[in-house]
Length: 336
Ligand code: 13P
Ligand code: SF4
Image (tube, rainbow, N blue to C red; front, side, top):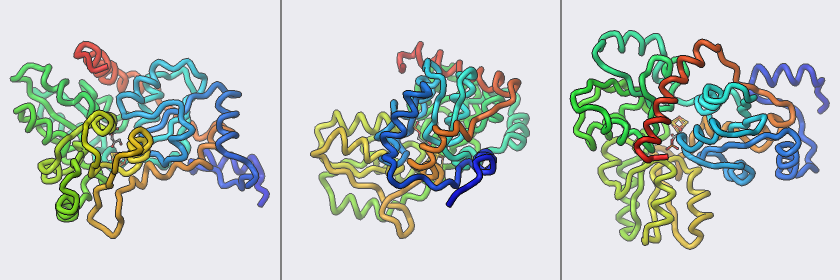
């Protein structure tokens, strides 16, 4: 198939991917490496990306680590293999860089569960509360927040505030409830959730635990309380990965998006990792947004430098304040 390049570029801008046929003889791993060097581009990838993308990334991390990398990079181009709010955060922190996302449709159900106009009205009902928002939200929500947090630092950030400080926590009710439980706070929670972490089947996980009594069950705090209750360890993706590396145990049931198993298995090849099953016919749990990015789209994105994250400057400045606050607090608290 031959496609007019201008039309193809326009499609790419509109749809977030380029429907061009890629020469099948190309080694995409080599091509991506060449393009990164030629264009002085850095490839930042989240652990939930498919293994091939993780294998060509310059940095793989959780939301906090990725934000830090985006802030400090001296590359000309940031290619963000993750979802839209992550690439947008990179642009907010480092606006001079061209920030690319292989598929612009890579959104996030959690971020979508909190539309800024509705949240603004909710916030107005609690005028004496400050707003702490999980980084999995749009720039519009960030601009309405006082402090951003991630699953790596949420507990310490909340704990560092005066006990009588009234707080709205958005958008993840599961992470918020977990922080309320572990800190003894009573934050007002926005009713949002992640489709991937909400769908784990307690029944199937319980059966899996019975079949593998030696396995430690580890879970991301975006999971529902019933799943967290039967977990041996709870943490962000990086914290889960470190736990599997450092603990003396040899097998783990992993209740988060299955992409993380790639790094777990690479760094502990002799250990056994069992993905926690969702409440559907699948054996493991993939995020449909994260998995929209492919090696092919990544190659085209680097080659044509599209789709690019563009932002309104006023919104960017407003959204940056609570992220900067999070990074400052994380430094003060010794988290980063
Ligand atoms: P972390 O990698 O920061 O733990 O976040 C998990 C997640 O759901 C990202 O979308
Ligand atoms: Fe959003 Fe959940 Fe996917 Fe993370 S795993 S990008 S929170 S839908």
